[in-house]
Image (cartoon, rainbow, N blue to C red; front, side):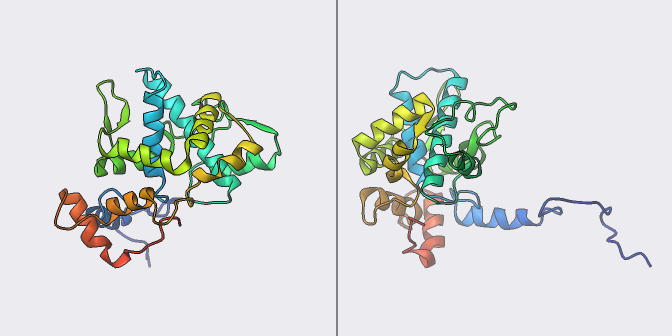
Length: 246
């Protein structure tokens, strides 16, 4: 007796969802929580990317997409190193970062790892990293990011720039200056990683302006704002009070 399913051929599948059944669940929660997905694991990325965009724009930024991508990938690789040093999860590239930290290098040069050269050991293989693969579409949905006339993703003039300022204020001018320099140089010492701990995903200070901003995004007033914001508000009522540092 042939007991194989008749609606598809038997095949070896390495994926976790070969029939695409998960898609219905994804569509459902995307409708309930616009701007949040199963791969946007750390809330602080939302302000960090806005700061990365604004800092790039204020640093004599080039309109060349490759220059923006290089800056973005270096920012992500450095964030992975900081998260790994702080022993935190949910940040793209930490597997690579843990390997670099285990090598006990005095200064970690991540220029090659942040490139798109497939012959190098990259922190992530996706061309636009975690930003392009997970966060940009969700941040665009929330009104934090858009495209400029050159086709480069940029923080929006209102919410996006506000998020960038809040992140900068939260980490302080000295850390912000060091962070900018380490991204530009594509290298970091262990001592620098210690000084950069304040940018880690869990370092959102409870009751801070940054924390309140995230709560505003997540638990928007159900009677005001966009349709997407209202949907998040109604859907998130039962989870209000969630510790955003986790």
